[in-house]
Length: 99
Image 1: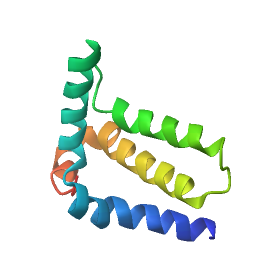
Image 2 (image 1 turned 90 degrees about the horizontal axis):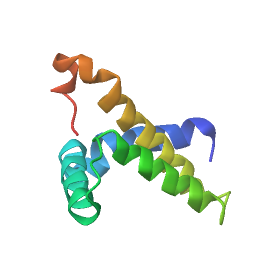
Image 3 (image 1 turned 135 degrees about the horizontal axis):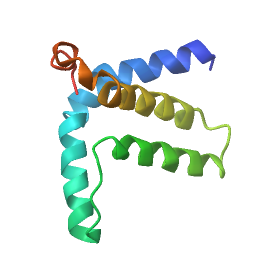
Image 4 (image 1 turned 90 degrees about the vertical axis):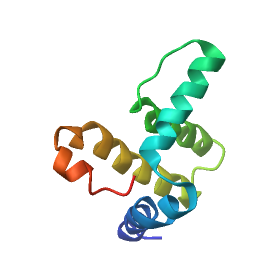
């Protein structure tokens, strides 16, 4: 798979496929951090969720470094992190995002 195509796949799955299948990513992050806090007593920020998912994908790459899905998912999680972290200061942009 070419660099462009795995980035295009990451773009597509974060904008349409994952949203329609799994719901709003931002809401899911809120739920996940509440579950994590209930289990561990440790408070996380919403932005920590995609960072942890990126870390998990990087760990999985140790077992199978050529598995393209890991690269695609990391690119997708980075895009979501960017939207959560950087674009949060632009509320008019954030309200139009499907996550």
